[in-house]
Amino acid sequence: MKRHAIFVDAGYVFAQGSVSLLGRNSNRTQLKLDEADFVKQIKFLALKQSDGVQLLRIYWYDGARNGPTLDHLALANMQDVKLRLGSINSVGEQKEVDSLLVTDLIDLARNQSICDATVVTADTDVRVAVQIAQSFGVRVHLIGLEPSRVSQSPSLRQEADTVHEIARADVSKFLKVLTAAAPKVTVDIAAPAAKVRPLPATAGTTKGAMEKALGEILGAAIHQTLASISPENIPRLGAALAASDKVPMEHDGRLLGTCRTLLGRDLTGDERREMRSAFRDKVLSLGVPEK
Image 1 (cartoon, rainbow, N blue to C red):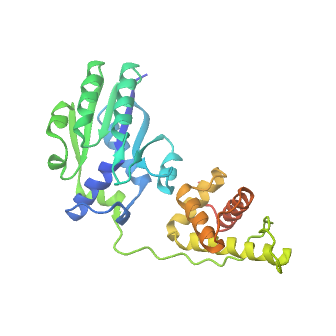
Image 2 (tube, rainbow, N blue to C red):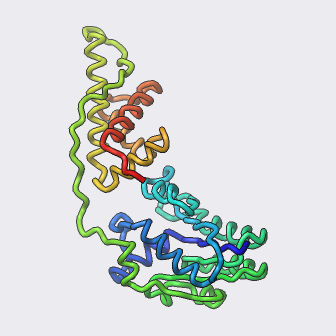
């Protein structure tokens, strides 16, 4: 069976996408990617280069500091998409991302798993992988974002069997510039209904009062964490929590930090479990989008 694999360097998509739309590099937090539209476009562009060839899958390469973000999880849950994460160091540089792409491309070519490969990147380090894949009979197609000629390595463009560019008008369909900070979501959060372990009793403080105080602190931490999430990401978070009991690290860290500030100490193991459970229950009560 003839199959086609697509390899996407997310860092390039965001960096060159901002240049395409704004004429300059922009902070990634100012951009919003429509994953579904991007996947649709890239599938169409790739498969029209190899008529009659089936898609193996799309490999999505990105860096992460503390585990996958909500955007990463949204991609990981999409059909035909394989999320591959490297790391981000203390100065914001991605590590191991290019090596993951290079290794996957070479391995799939060597194992004769693909006959065509589409690569969305600008990195000259991928050039050697392109050469090796071609030595195993794989045709390699390079896709860039307008203006791709000035962003992609000349040697990489020369090695590719075909070179294509996504026009600025099409880039604007899957990548948006956030002109202002997203409005904060407002939710009415009472103390979590789940029972929590009480704080250690102190002289003059009743057990019931300590339980109530801890419940209020957990409720406040949940409220503050939800208020920091843009409205369009609440359904994504709900979908992630519906699929897994684990709270994404970006929100788990905020929950723990807020509780630590309010309590003046770290939560115990049992208190952390109760906090995460209450947070998950609250998010799911806000609704999970239908697939």
